[in-house]
Amino acid sequence: MHMTMRMEEFSRAYVQAISAQAGCNPYSYKVDDDSIDLGLGMDENARARLEIQLKCTSADTANGKDTFPFDLSVKNYNDLRVESIVPRLLVVVRVPEDISAWTQQTEQKLCLRHCGYWHSLEGMPDRDNTTSVRVHIPHANIFSVEFLKTTMRRIAAGERP
Image (cartoon, rainbow, N blue to C red; front, side, top):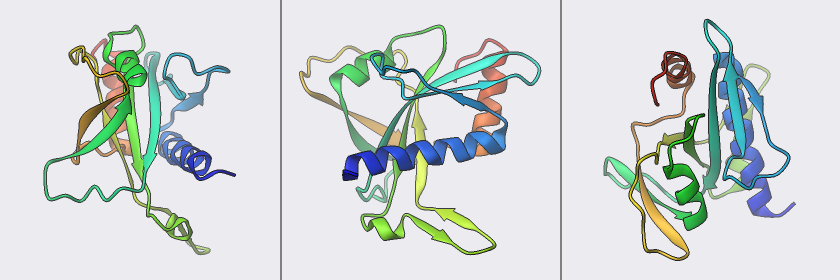
């Protein structure tokens, strides 16, 4: 399997592991023509849905700043910046450069390395770029179980992420 496919599958597994613990039900579309790789649904008190564009990088994001840069295709940028009925997020999962370090497993644990970060591009301005747009993702925006539970409750209440 090509490395980009491995990275895509790893990022999907990361999000699905977090969403399983949060109590979300993942769904996907047969064709990704709208920059959505994965959707999540939650039916606790009210129906909530969230759609995600997944990306994966082995770039070192520990730059000592509050954000790290990520280059996104213009199509993905434009699809994610428009307001939609179902809120959309970009989720970037950072993995070690060495594929053998992506996971650590014992009988007691399965560790997925390193971390996933979310970013909402809704309302971002139109850009003149023709191939890619650099977005800056906050290090504080960790795609975690608590973040996902809180976000799904907010969506159910009619708020945006």
